[in-house]
Length: 278
Image 1 (cartoon, rainbow, N blue to C red):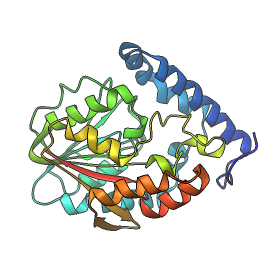
Image 2: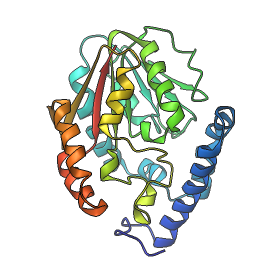
Image 3: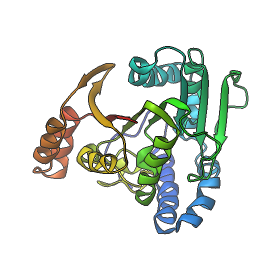
Image 4: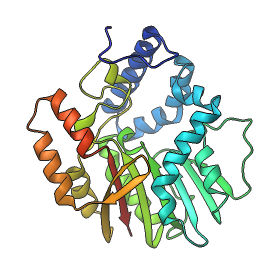
């Protein structure tokens, strides 16, 4: 139970270990489940997680307005350049929906799409916001060609590897022609990025797969998006970089042992920040 890195302030080693065990058990169930079984797990997994881990960061962040402000400002730096004119915005896995509520101040309409309702019941909901709770597969409540900007942050890594292609296909269907899917997900070499980072060298919690950009590029190319762009992004600064940069960095970093590869990759590829265009 000795942690590999310092425990976050305000939490005990016992609390972090408990979250690790809870997430690992849920993850093992998901990895072994069929698609129909995953639907049932998705419907209740976050209720189970938060009940067993009452000190989870998503819950404590609700009570910390400054932390919420910083997290939302960071998310906004990813999408702001794409928000022009009247637009319809859809966020996948919006969690407490506070970021979606902020975007609603500029948008014509905002749709939150999640497997459960994780909003704070005390939060005021904008009139142009709608939350759609789905089973992870059936998104028929969102019309084809109806969304200008789709967005997800730290979500794709939570998908079962067999479901990732379907997710990108669902997003493609709901985007308008020329619409964009903006997403951020951890880069595999820099991880793990879930709770298992404190105890393991590989993701064992609710990050079911952390991706390499080369893998993501191959997946998106086969689905039907017209373009896929990747950006280097850190502290609000974004630089569009050629795929050759990322592929070379991943290959070079992968030559080192895990501890060194992680440090090298964190400087070269902080995370995967992609924009897929319909």
